[in-house]
Image (tube, rainbow, N blue to C red):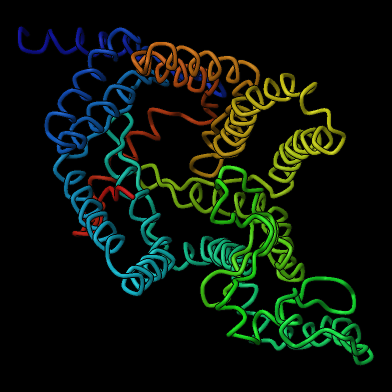
Length: 491
């Protein structure tokens, strides 16, 4: 009797504590971080990072993420970050070694430096998609909510399909921007310079084809003592160049060249072509720009328009790739965003940018820069944080607001307000600048709060039952733990 009596009481207690779940329901995301608490962590992190010459930065990153994860809560459970600082330190040592190689190459002869730069570009283009997958895999592997870890599917082939096209367009764009700098070499290689030179030389040859000079009574000595001129009355450079003896006796003086008895302070600005040693021409910047073939600028303009036109699509496929490869336990994440939404965001941003550039061009073209300088500077200063807040808020809403877990049973909602985020970013920038960086911790906490507190989770199925199933499947899931390259790459 005595042994059986507690059983009904325990069963009754268990029954009384059970609260049935109601769904569908909305669970808001709560952020409880405080600027004063995080300031102590941030300050110690910076001091120790400086004292250890950057070695402590790995521990600083872990402490920062643990603070923000631990203070973010949804549906009664908080997040956690469980990565080891030693793995982050290893990745940063690799990045530091590459930086040392880059610095050594920068101080090497030009040929070696060029080969090193090209090698870095080739390696980056080859490994950038792989690095993106590895970084996401590391970040999510050590991120968990209510004891269940996230994962990232290592789809390397899909990463190359997503990231290689924009990288190639950017590479072609940067290469086309270098074409005007090699205008003369390209014209010589293409044979354009010879044809243009023949057309330009027709007029001087026609001018030189003048009748023979009329004989005078001057003696040869008097002719030698006079300045030789062409029939047009202009000083002859040809005579000075083709008669070394005369040039040796009295060198030809050009505009801007001071005589031995005059001070060089009265020299006029050297805006004309000056003959230096060996007859080499030194040209001003204006002359260099005039000699650039306008056809060589067209490829960069065309590629720039192509890149701007494809930028929304590139961002869309990147966000979709990242979202669809996320796993919560073993549950897949689906993404329902479309490219049209991204085009609306980016075309509005590009329109605002074009209007600002048009105002600057109009002010310069109409000589009203002095009158419009102050308003244009104010507009430009405000444009930077406003455009950043607009893109940040809209992209957050599209990325998280279009994600759902386990075939739509749990849907993430995001509605980060543009104007409120813009106000936070502007005031953050002002306070960090005024305090010389001491308000950085306060700014990070404010930015995290305005983003996280405008997100929520729509629960359309029993959440506790789902979490219990994921915990059981995760325990039985034999996943290969990260290899040596699955690290937080610090590029």
